[in-house]
Each structure stands twice: as C-alpha cells, then as structure tokens.
Length: 271
Image 1 (cartoon, rainbow, N blue to C red):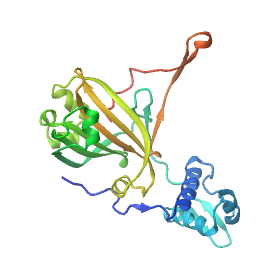
Image 2: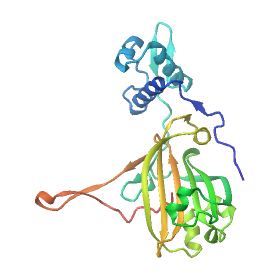
Image 3: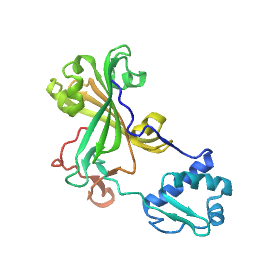
Image 4: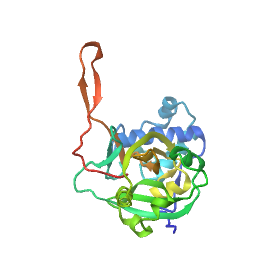
C-alpha cells in the first residue's frame, strides 16, 4: 500500500548554503514575530550588511519567501511581511516525550502511507536487539491535526507480534493499544530527540520545503523481559510541534536543583 503525499509539489529552499541560511534566519524572524504581520523588512542593503551576504544571495532567499507567500515585494514600497495563517499545534511533555493536545477540542487523525513486512534497517535491528535477518512489520503513517499534517511516523514491530492485527486496524487504532491487545506487556522505553532536514518525500507529505528543519524522535519500546517490541522513528514539523516541561525546585542547600514534574493524569498518547 502506498499513498500519495499530501503536497506532491514540495517546495525547495534557495540554492546555495548562504542563501539557505539567510532564508531560514528570516523565516525564523517571521514565525517568531520578530517581523510582525505588515511590518517592513529592513532595506536590502542593510540586510546584506547585517547578514554578511551579497545582494544576489539575499534576493535568492527573498524569492523563496515570496514564493511561499510570506513576504510581499513591491517596487518603491519595499518588502513587507505577510504572517502565515496560524496553524494548530501539538506539544509534548519533555519528561515523557509523549504528545499532548495543547488546546482542548483539537483531534488528530492518522493516514497510513505504507505497510509491509521485511528485514529492518541494521540500526533498527541493533537498537531493538533482534536478529538483523528477523522479519518486522514496517508501517509509515502521517498524523494530522485539524486536517493539517504535523508528523511523519515510521514504526517497526517484530512479525510474531504484528501478525495479531491487520493493516486496516493499524490505520484506525493507536499502535500501543494494538500491542497491548496482542499480549505485549510494555515495560520501558529509550528515547532520543534531535533535528534533521526534510527529504523530498517527507517534505511532500508534510507540506514543507525540501531541506526544511524537522524535529526527530526515536523510541525503542521494550517488554518486561527487555525485548524490543517497537521502534518508532518520528519526524515533526517544528512550527506545529513543541517540547515543554514543568519543573519543581527540590533539595536543600548546595544540592538544591530543578527536577521534572511528571503528571500521571495527562491523557495517554501513543505517538
């Protein structure tokens, strides 16, 4: 099974490393509100000096921003910011790295992009501590909030577990529930968060420019005996997903420090 990307005409970042750097700097200023809606950007000559680039390089970056509808350039009137439409957002409790809804009423849906059985990548087999020739179910899903894609998820599950549920069930049910229904007793998980750039296929599904920054989350879930029962490779749009943590000041004297507060009452989320 293979679904088409949500946005098959993925946008591209400007050519050249300097132009891409300038594009991302200006994009960050627009999305953070440093350059608010309707505000005029500094003159090109000033931007060139501030950013340390030539006018040709700057204009490549501005061309890309204009193509995405983020700025409006008019001869004699300068360049003004056009704030993008506010996107729904998801947040993750950093102490558990489990996504939670930021605003009540938002609902997420999943779209199954691919589903197959085969040998996992070597890095996945090593992380799960399974044989490199063992068969696993590989499934890729797109998760959406209010109809907009915000995460690209690839999961690997050992075949003997995955055969307990169908492709259609995976398309409509959280994977953790399917694992538990299959008799898996989840005990621990090892997680890491980093960053990467969007390749053409993922960019198309998430509606981003090729090379746009993404948050990455890799998780290995283990059962009570320490066996790997799932590997999750997740990619998140940073403009629609954030990490947050509540901290509490604990201890006394020189040993006083910040400690994460885990709220067990928060709604469970699988990915």
